[in-house]
Amino acid sequence: MVIIMRARIVASVLLKQGSLILFFVALMIVSGCAQEQGEASEQTDQPAETETSSADQSDSDFKMQIVDVFTITGRGVVATGVVSSGTVSVGDELCLVKEDGERQTVSVAGLEQFRKLVETASAGDNLGVLFEDLELSALEVGATLTAKERCQ
Image (cartoon, rainbow, N blue to C red):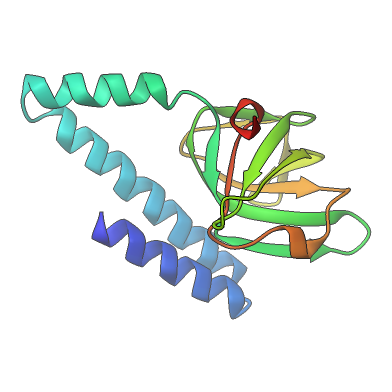
């Protein structure tokens, strides 16, 4: 878990320095570490599998922690991160949960993976989520995008 957190920090620093390619490489490493960690816990003993299964069922809703935010002129505001659970599609409404607990419903205008526009994304995907009707100040690194139902 410590390795994953350190890799996320490195990814954030790389993106701020303008190294987009290295940023996505770091995100791929984070994703790979998370998957390896999940596989390792599945290979241990039966109780660990049971705990993992019940956690997966409760976390089936979309969830992504925001690693970076930026503006694309003429398009809108983008939040990047790795999808930790669930799926998201263009047009979905999500709940933006800030670190101070403030919640806001937002609408997904576009999804991008490695400069390729996609219609849907799921757990493990490195993702840029585009919001057209949102100000950059509304997003913050460390905030979480979750299923709309979590806003209530």
